[in-house]
Structure formats: structure tokens, C-alpha cells
Image 1 (cartoon, rainbow, N blue to C red):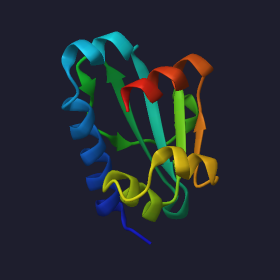
Image 2 (tube, one colour):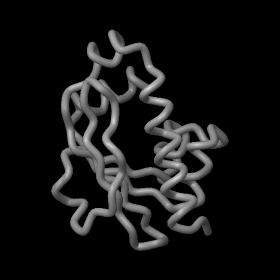
Image 3 (cartoon, rainbow, N blue to C red):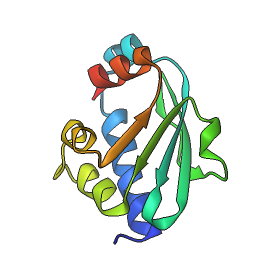
Length: 113
């Protein structure tokens, strides 16, 4: 099981990957949304805001249910996805990644990633 620091680093890696996306492509597919990532096995949740400029820094979140896009994943799977050792679509299909969002948000995120 990964620890909190490793999860923060993984989320930072994801943010860096999104920051590297071409700004025009990012602006085309991004609508401002709050995003929470609940790391189930650690009982932690992180929150960020996605916008045309990328992602704000992830911060601990006391109530992830308020976010417009909610992800739930175990710590090891989060780290594996950040390292590109686990495909998010495969993790979702296997039930290792849960995503709660509107269908429109899912389609936008799929195009971005």
C-alpha cells in the first residue's frame, strides 16, 4: 500500500502531464470543474480545480462528495496510473477506478487524457 506522500507525488505527476497538454487543446476540451480523488485504502481525499490553465495544486479534502467529478481508487493503483503502468480505462473497466461525473464531463476528460 502506497502512503500519503506517494499519493501526493502521483497526483502531482498527473497535474504535470495535464500541464504539458497543448494550451489550445486544453482550452478546447476543458470546462472548469472541481475534482476529488478519494484514496479509499488510506481514507484520504484530495481536491483540485481543473480549468483552462490546467490543475490547481491538490489539497486534502474533508468532503469529496461536493466535487463535480469524483474519483475513487486505491493508493497502489493511483501510483501505477501516474507511472503509466496501469491504464485508467482498464482500471475503470476492472472496477479499480470509480468515476462519478456527468456523461459530458467523462467525454471531455477522455479526449484530454
